[in-house]
Amino acid sequence: MTDSPEQDYDPGDVAVIGMSLRAPGARTKEQFWDNLVHGRESVSFLAKDDIHVDETLIHSPFYVRACGVLDTYDKFDPSVFGISDRMAAAMTPENRLFLESAWETLEDGGYDPDRVKAEIGMYGANNPQTAALYSSPPDRVSVGPEAIEASLAWSPDTMTSNALYYMGLTGEAVTVAAVCAGFHYAVHLACQSLLLGQTDMAVAGGAMVRLPHPRGHLWEENRILSKDGHCRPFDANGTGTALSSGVVTVLLKPLAQAVADRDHIYAVVKGSAVNNNGVSAMAYGLAQPERLSACIANAMEVGGVAPDTVSMYEANGLGMPMTDELEVHAAGMAFGKQTGTTSIGGVKGNVGHGGVVSGGFGALKAAMALYHRKLPATINLTEVNEDLDLPSTPFVPQLETADWETESGVRRAGITSIGGGGYNAHLVLEEAPTVAERAPEADGRPRLATLSALDDEALARQRARLKDWLEAHPDLRLDDICFSLNLGRKVMSRRWAAVVRSRAELIAALSDDSPRGLATETAAAPRVDPDSFRRNDHGIVRSGTDAPALSELAAAWVTGQQVDFGSLHLGEASHRVPLPTYPFQPRRFWRTDW
Image 1 (tube, rainbow, N blue to C red):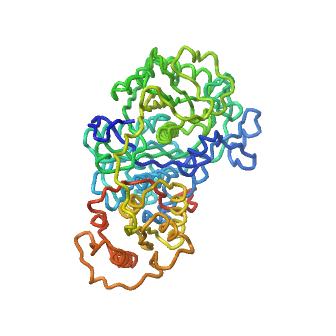
Image 2 (cartoon, helix red, strand yellow):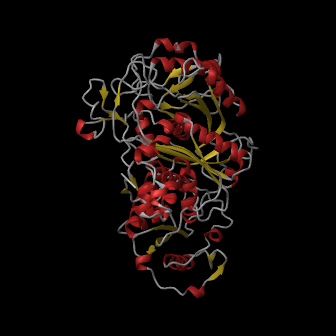
Image 3 (cartoon, rainbow, N blue to C red):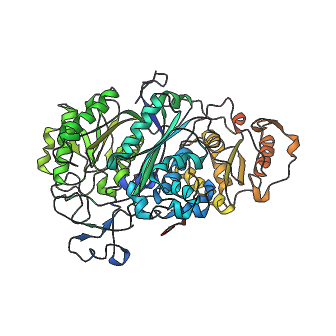
């Protein structure tokens, strides 16, 4: 950990201040982390009746009915973004998933897109094949001018620009094509842009939906797909991996600025590097050890990171002895001879191979491991492949979930992603710096907490989710909670507000049977005279900090008045903290023709 919160931060460090994930078996990053620490495998084994494709293959003895199923792959909530049902159906599933995930990432970081006065870069990877598998491209000649709009929703190229547009943001938009290394490439490009000052914050990630969905795969010897559907990283009996789908996005900002802005920091990107094997490949599509080693070493070098301080290595780990051996050999060359030990693991045993988002699964695993100071076990590893020769490397397989102890004094993780066609990429993450000590909260000071949604049902779900979250996170301060809610969420038409003096009062106010007088909402708000309030360009300005003044402010806000929440928190040292994001109400959208 950082010794002094007053330190000068490395100008090349980039903070991860928001994260969002949907993966097989997990709709949130918290569920994903819980699955990892408890060693759950989220690859599904399908009944024949569940597979409506591959009719000519499904009866083959080599057809494996295993798949990392994403249960929301065909669902979307267009109302939040002002998107019509017609346009929602035109959008590919990856466009839709990336948009919702980018929204969640920004909210997780504590930022309302309507109040962000900054350039937001958007960098994302997807599968160019998905659009064609989802539906044939629109015919601009026969359909007419409407096809142009539809094609922008359908095109893989416009995934990131759509996210900027529908979230009401401006900035760079780059859609990346780097096959299975796509997530890492997106993060690498985002960091480059941030460090060059071309953008203020950046959302980077990847989305993958394997179509048709769900489906199994046909096993072929010496190919990367598993014979029995299980992925066994580093195991002598590994035969490859299963295929899966998902989406991961992260919100990035230069570290020094994130600290100054009192952002919540999950981890720090110390370094990133990418390269390609080119003509040096042993065989096209296979890892080339010298090139992969150079990529890993370069990421550590640009971050000023000594290999013996990296105590977690999250491997690409396809679970195929030949590819695992090539990767371990390459990583061993990059790390060199050292006395320290580095935990080695592979998340594909849990969730399978997510294509362009597979590196995102590994990166989010590493970020959460740093955040919780815990190393999850690599599952399905029962017989370590002796040909890896791990005793001669710095790597020790992580067989059990354990607390993360380190001899170097700082926790760091390296995450490798390899893509067919010779793509190599590596990220180095470090634990977040120590937060400066703050004075305890003033006892009994009244505070205003707000929530809003598109309708009363979503508002009720928000209240329930926030109540559960606060009960599960007793360390959260009330001032941080209110600061994050009031300034970090988009203001919608149905509103709820409470004036409370403690976490316990806020939890009580969020309950269905909350004490009368604590909370007010749009459906039953007291009348107020809007002309009685003082205003500035950003809305109503508080008239005082006592409970009656805040209650009047709450009543005005829930009845539709604009409030300057910035002035409400002026002079405070509150920090942004992760809280539940908007409760999307997804519906099924699917197109079979134009």
